[in-house]
Image 1 (tube, each protein chain N blue to C red):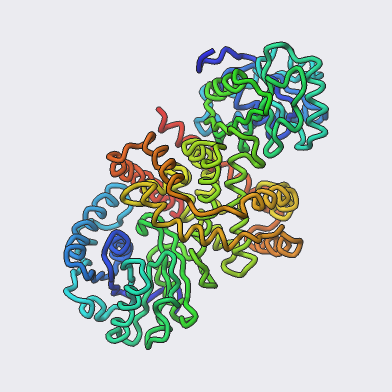
Image 2 (cartoon, rainbow over the protein chains, first blue to last red; image 1 turned 60 degrees about the vertical axis):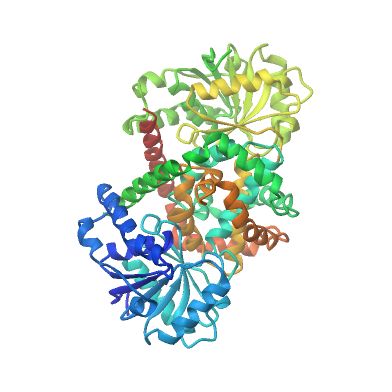
Length: 316
Length: 316
């Protein structure tokens, strides 16, 4: 198999926001998408929700076909077996708990067809923790998206200790074929790459607020009016590579003493205690009332759609 | 003085890339800009360079007037005294070394007029390290930009232990009047806010590459095709506030165990050694040859100008 995957049928197992979002990404690319959730009401709500998103995507020029045509590719499955029947790929997006995931993977082990690959949306738990020592273990890996996957292209592929190379290659080709941006995580490290990078920045941000160095709002400004601009189209390595006349080594030799000193000043950073969490909550609520969260999420998604449309235009 | 600053004259002391960039930000806003550098060739090159940038800005709709009109506001000063004569504000952007900065501030102490405020572009050294115990100490603070300041709006204002409240208020009003986004840093912490956030993310990125978890290119992808999108228009606090149904406290209660565990796994992180720096350099050079760095910087500035134009349009 080359970059052209032959997969045409996928199953969505766990159809909450993440699973249904994956469904949109696959259906938009021409796949038949069978949707299953052990909670019937979640399963039933998923496709109508996806259709509404398709209409919004279409309005932003992010859908090549009509929403109606794409919507017809969704099929509500009555049970797990029906969902995975004939599927080339299963995207699992159930609750992030080892025992619940293990139980599902044991069920899948009993019924999965011989060639089907399974990707888990797990954002932190590695596949070895719930998918090893099964018949299907070589065909299971982590395919961790950022929400929503039909707007933000990144996906982290993380094999377990028992995942086959073929399964990773299949998942890579599949993800590229639907327009995702693939990152290979070679070790099962806690939080993978994306959440580790986010964690590092967040812990520093929380500590700066806690210590009275700056307010949440000013820390947010520092990123949205400063640091975040370059990171939206270049990564951190390319950013520093361009930020010193001689490239990244030149930059590292100049800045490592400062950065190392900063890192050393945070070695004893503890958990976020209840008081700190309450203060941050209070600070945020001054800038955005609790009953405005939903409207602000719509605003965020609007901005993400504009970014996605911009990316799409650049690729043409 | 209110948000309307009455300042009309500024001096640029140190006219390399950062100083000349500040000059553009001020001249564009209508200020007369006197430019001085102790290195005559740097001083002479600054204004022609700025004029070329003005032409590019104009081509991107980022200049309300003609480049010629704005360019006329630049004056090449023959010495420090001429530069600061009549200036309401001095932006210092000389070499980042305590002894060199101290020497300049002692010179300024002898000649600065009574009301002039001085902001230093220092990106890491706090003002207390070079501007205390002088006549002018209450009027000196850090005004730390991201390069280039005429495109990326953020500026960190950091008072020394001797800076007056009035000087901070003056600098805030001045920066807002030229369209910058002001962050108040209340304590003289190493790296201030921006570089501390960048340092935290960079150290995790370097460690992930060093440990074979992911390549530089894949770590860059994780940010530019994932994490960085939201950070280009929301800060990290707003991002997580919108990422859990109940807001930021809800998010913190869910994610702190993971984030704390990730933080603990990095407590013993040492300096970047020569071998690691060489490996990162080699990795980057595979994606961008050394002789392509300059062209890629032009590409970056093009992207930044598009982002700046987008921001400007949203404000209308």
